[in-house]
Structure formats: C-alpha cells, structure tokens
Length: 565
Image (cartoon, rainbow, N blue to C red; front, top):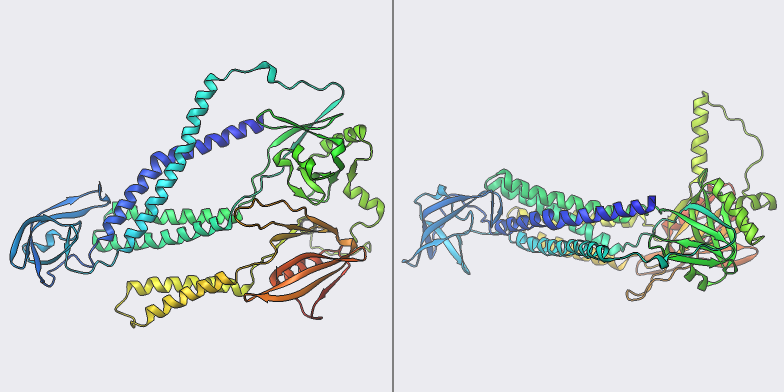
C-alpha cells in the first residue's frame, strides 16, 4: 500500500509540475523573451542630439508604455516623429521602443531606417540578446509541449478509468501448499542520464546567467524600472536553476526502491508489481541465494546467482540489476526477514542459501584483521565512542573509483576555458579600450582550447571500482554506438584476501591522454581486470587498496618505485 500511495504521490507531483510549466512558467518566460527582443534593439545611447546624416526626425508625440505589454516586461518610451530624408518629408512615423525619448524635445535627431523599423542613427550593440531570446523561446515551446503530454495522458487515464470494469477472473489464484511472504526493499532505480544532457544543462545555465547579468546592465542604464529588473532576475534565476539541474543530473543519488513483497513457494520466487502482473523464477534457474552482511551495520543484502542469462527474463526489471554475486534482489532487508527467507528457501531447496560472512568465518580466509590487542588512550569515554564510530564508518563504507577519474591538469584546463569565456565577454563590452588584435587572438585561443579538451577526452574503459571491507569489485559499463542498446556486463568480484598481486601497466598514450591497464593475480592465474583507466584512477585505487587491512598482496607498477600518474 505504501508503494502504491508513493507512486500516486509521484504521479500527482509530475502532474502539478506539468500544470505549473504549461500555465504559469511557460507564459511568464514567453514575456521574458519578448523583453529580450525589445532590449536587442536598444541603441547605444538615446539621449542628446546625434550627428545628422541623410535622415532626421523631430518628435511629435511620446507615450510611456508598461509594465506589461506586447514588448514584454518593463517601462519604455514609444514615440512618433516626423521623418525627413534628403530634405523630403515622409510624414509621421513610429520609432522602435526607447529610440527616442521626451528628453530629445524639439531637437532634430539623426535617424536611420532598418527594414521596416526606424531607429536612432547610433550603434545597436546588443543584437546577441535577440539570438538568446530565440534560443530560450524554442526551449520554452518544447517545455510547454512536453508539459502538455502528462496533462493529456491524465485526461485520457481518467476517461479510461470511468469506463473500465473490474474483471473478477483476472485475479491470480493462490498456489496450494506452503508459501512464505517476505517484505523487502527493491533495488534502487539506476540513473539513466546521459553526460551530454548534463553538458547541455550546464552550458544553458552559464549562458542564461551571462544574459541575465547583461539585461541588468541594460535596464540600469535605460530606465531602471522594477519590471525590467524582474525580467532580468528571472533569466538569472533560470540560469541558476539550469546549473542546479546539471549538478543534480550528475551528482544526484539513485532513486531508492519501493517496499515490495515476494512469495517463496514450492514453484519458486513469485514477484508482483504495481500492475498486478506476476512473474515466477523457478528454483531450477538459481545456482544460489546469497545473503551478504558485510555492508553497513544492520543492513543485509540479498543476491540471486542465476543459471544463465535466460533466467533474467523471469525477473522484473527492478530485480535484474547486476551485483557482485549475480543480480541484486534487495539492498536492504531486516535480519528477521532474512532468517525467515533463508529457512523457507532451505525447506524448498536445501543447500541453495549461502551466508557470505558466516562462510568466510568458517573457511578461515576472511578479512585479515590484526588479532594483536592494541592500547589506545582517549581523553574521555565520549572521545572513545566517537573514535569507534568513525573507525566503523570508514571500514564499512565502500570506496568507489571511476575509471575516467579526471586528473588535476584537466580540471585546470576547464577552469582556463571558463576564464577565456569571461575574457571574451569583457572584451565585447569594452571594444574601444583594448587593442584591435586582442579580441581575435582570444577567440582563436578559446576555439583551440575547446578542440584540445574535446580531442583529449576520456576514451578508455568505462566503469567503477568498488573497494569494500574485504573485496574489490569492477563494474564495467558498456559503451556501444548511439543506436545500440547498452548491454549489462556482469561485475567481477575478488576477495582481497585472495588477491595475490595487482599490476598497473602503462599503455601507449592515445590522443594526448595516458592510460593504465589493470591486471590481477588471483588463484595463481593472471587476468586483465580493466584495459584502459586514467592514471588518476590508478593512483586512487592503489590508495584505497592499501587502506584495507584485508589486502595483503603486492602492488606492482610497470616502473618499480613509481606510482601511476
């Protein structure tokens, strides 16, 4: 019931967000885009008499419009003036917003015609706002269009619900014989987020922040009204929101799984989902059921070691996530539930259950902890308790190392790129204060910098190393072509006590990046664990292994006495 109510709450949240985007945020950003279009045509100056050319104008009437109009948010002047070209009067014409102001009075102002628009005869250096407004307008259009889809689906669902009739024959018949119902927490839903999406969001956020600050500058120079500042502030907030979304896209934890119930029957493991669909995994498709207590204190994870890949089709998608021992049934189950499940499975199929920690203790090759007593002096009992908690936390928490871990030089490279972008923006604002040759040089340097960063991107083996209290696990991630669905690669798990030697071997550089091959010696045989990882990842992995007391093997590098990197 909790999972159903949580699903309904999530659906209601999505629907509320869709309504907010379609009816509130979308129209508001539309008027913000109109404001940007108006500011794009703002003259460099709109005060004082300008140089007279072929065309001139004398103001007839001026009206102050705002705060909300067809030109967006903010107050502005809309003037009509009598235009004269080469001494011939063209009558009274309408000028673009803020081109002329009442401050011009009866002065003769030099003007120019741009298409169907009349403007003051000065520079208009803010045309980039027009492009930015078009980009944001297109994004708003697709966002509103995407928001309308959940609304339409909700309406169709409500219509179908009123017409649907419950069929009593669709209810599943209960199996005869013994069955045991187990409550467990389903595995967390994996993040299916493309790095490209994070890059697009981050760039859009930075772009919106720059445009928003620019709009603040223009409004402060022109009128400084609150409505215009509010429009600029909305663009700044949009940039902050997009940047936060990019950070969430990359660093947000996986969505926790729901509380589920499974049935252990004579036929196998019976699973249910929210749609009342049922799948049964027969006991014949299992090699073992592993209960692992080596995670965080009080948390037991359950794993299924399958006979072959065809057995995965008899599990729901949420139970197919690869783990050290096969697939993850649950990352967290209470001791009482685990004991009940273990007893029931042993009753149906004796010898199928394995308790990892208990077997390690019996076999004698468990974590090689120092058995010699140590005397540690603490100032008081509270300090001793805090120290014990810190030591337990450090030993229990697994350490994760990405194979593409970024070295410090590359981080400095991205910082330099952002610095060049800021320099470009500053140069565009003060074109008369810098030498003419400087701007093209900075542009070329920025383009070359981007090309170098792109060409030297990580091209090694994607994956994550996980070092826990007594094992090393390599989770490799498939990286096929864009049109190919990624396959799930089973992880490789090695006990640290049985890891005799790990070797890091430098491979030939590829496009300016250095990579390291990781090989392990296990049970007297050598095998390659990962083909190409960064030197920074190799250094971090070495430090993590040496910090574990269960690891008593050797770490060998291709050049003795040197660490990777």
